[in-house]
Length: 613
Image (cartoon, rainbow, N blue to C red; front, side, top):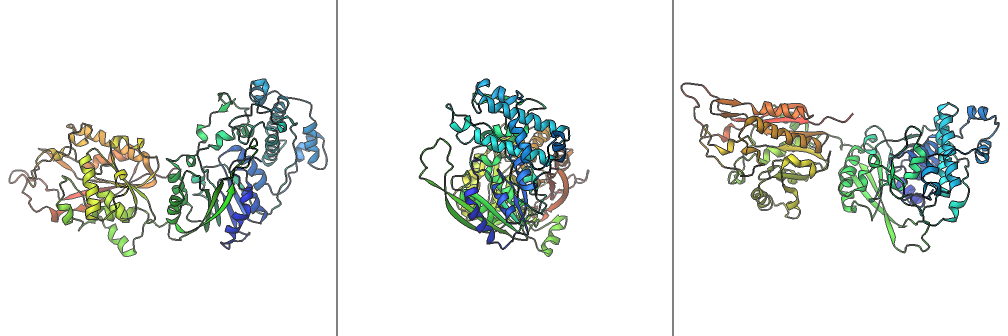
């Protein structure tokens, strides 16, 4: 079958890499991006138990036939209905000799009768007729599910030979290819005999990986911006049918809407994060083999870095001829490089963190102490800094040891970013004040010896209420932040007589909001944006303290707890950050007429984004 990205010619190369693992044919082989099932069929033939998956219906139909079927289907009920005995060849003889024609969606839209020429009128009528019959036989229980997909596969194979296209179905040829004028013929499909429980799925690969075990996990995700749902939409239409409702189509080619089938692996902005999510959930596999070429949207170095987060990586490369469309008369002299990445995951990759038992116990105590400012932090011209020691401890406790992306929506002087970079994490911060971005870069390079390269991109000047416009959804592993404590910085404190320091004059600055309830509502908007970009099971930790303004007490930690839960987070726990040693200039508040508590602690509110069920 003509299919962009098919690995038929690379099967010896792939097999040679799998053999290096020592995992033999009695084990299972998971193919999460099956396409035409070329790789799955090969390893089924070698004796592996194959689990196949793809999001497209036509790929699923092929896998149900090639992978899940272990012997020729019987067609007992259909043979009785058609009064046919013996082999399946007679069923195909019946279909190929059928004189009846059912006008349908293909004839109306994709033949000259419909103003397009993907198929001749006669072949389009045959496709409609066969699809009508197969659907009718299925609904009337004359064929089983696997027999139905076997017939669909035979039709797809036949259609592939008479399609008036250059290779993919994104457009039809303006002149007729001689093959397209041949009559559509249905033939039996060769089935690989097997006693194994092979299985086909039609699921999102990033979700299915969480539910299955694999000895060999083979990954062949889309490489480039070409969406398979659009390139093979005709095959998808034929596999899905049009019997419940007619698909909406548009344009010169009759393309159907496919937004619901777009792959994140085809976009430069989403591919790496999507692969990273898949790999981290694949770490229970015994071995992973990832196929990717040098023309893909993800650079080789980024792939190797991602894979190395879960284990040891070896890279193997082979020259490979470019995909050749039917109307190419000359071979493209330029070769592509097909990379196979072999990964052996570490057994500890799914640990919550790298803490020892002693450290785990110590960090589990509900009061944290001895996390005060360093000399560098004491000298900073920042009105409300929290410490690198604190954030480092939070990262050690709440972020997986292998990689991870950390967000601070109120980045300030960059404490969260610095702590994350020192832990070799990917980081991103947002703030309104460009002066503090400069301070972050100065701190990182001068005080912490962090290389300057790339720091500019890690600190975004912008409103945190618009996070999801800048960050991909479900891309953040941990968010640690200390939001503005309302307008506390704009007034002198009574407890230690510190002068007011205006953080910024921006109208978007939450610290400049006069009304407390309006301030909390704005903070909720930020929480909602954080929720969108957090990965399921990711932690969101807010450092806050309660406030007193004149005679009124404002329980900010309670309001933060409420709004975080309202946007969807689960409230996991509270840690008290004891800061009493840092408060050395306290006054007896209210003495001697009204007793008022001197607050020398802050709250670490721990939330988590629920896992998607």
